[in-house]
Amino acid sequence: MASSNKPPISCTLTTGNFKDRIAWIGELTRDALRGYQQQGLVLDLRYAPESADRVREMVRKEQQCCAFLTFEMHEEPDEIRLKITAPAEARETAALLFEQFVAFAPTRPVLGCCGSEGTCGQWPR
Image (cartoon, rainbow, N blue to C red; front, side, top):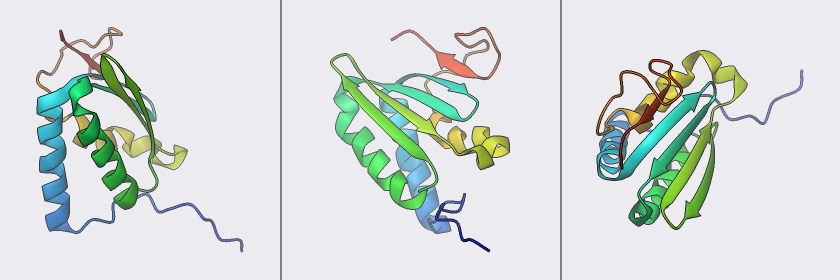
């Protein structure tokens, strides 16, 4: 039987460290998240440009404990864009995996930008 080099779909943080990380991500979200959109296995996040160092730090930390997620960051003059992609094996739990990144968003839209409830978040800048 061939072994797979894919990392397990689970966070490697201990309970205490996980709680601290969620609180830290929540603070970043409240301070700097401008909008988000989830479509299937992809979560697109938009942050204020002054949060670039904190977003880079979050990506670095999350890559260590959640190696199964793929992070793609783009820095633009007016915003930081971060795309997080979950593997196909996580299809049923993707919304739960992504919740930590948007749970403390400044507002929770009733209808998202694409008109579908609960799949994307947009609010005025």
